[in-house]
Image (cartoon, rainbow, N blue to C red; front, side, top):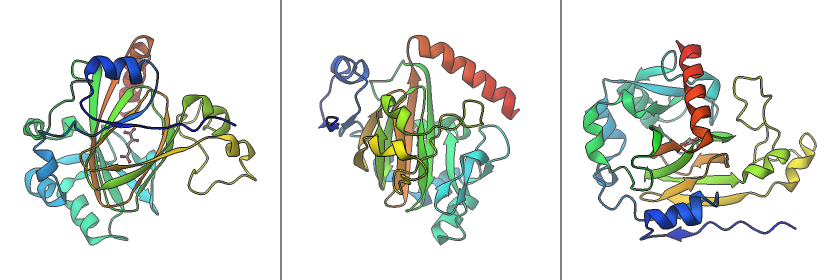
Length: 260
Ligand SMILES: O=C(O)CCC(=O)C(=O)O
């Protein structure tokens, strides 16, 4: 029997402790006081984005039912849409809401940076990038893993996030290495199919509910599945370290060429 993974909620965590106890140990943690001085915590809601950034073209992902269809996401082409139009549809609800915003920070004007403070844990981090996610209640991002370290900050709403450690990969049936999305699993942690994916019963999920104002550190290669329990807005901070940095640059260059 594997030991149950516990994810602590902490505050007042210094950068050194963060690296020693969590980054270097590849251990997730929820930090509760990152957003203390963020204007975004008060201001960000669907209307704020409509009123302040309504005219911009942001990256989006189409929904297939309640699931984000990652195949439709592109940082540079196709999946872009006007923020006001997407949010108006989200406010009308399903079936009008047919896509969510999942956009690189650079799509937004620079003034958006006044709304938050880059957390000290990743400020100055190599290859630091952010994406903003805006979606209605119910929406799911399927189970996947990413190369960078990820500080995932809930600004509005609430998400249920199911995590698995990287070593559970053998139970999670990832897509083929040669597919478009080799980092996605074919299993659904919310509806496990043990007939089709028998080894998935050995995977050990760890479930957290992340509330507005809280940040979840998702270490590199940890698997994560996210469900909006409420209409939600979040921003993540991805950064890379050591040998993974080379991979991150290579993957980004490859993606840029593919999407051009
Ligand atoms: O917010 C979401 O639903 C997706 C976020 C995500 O997959 C990530 O930060 O890696």
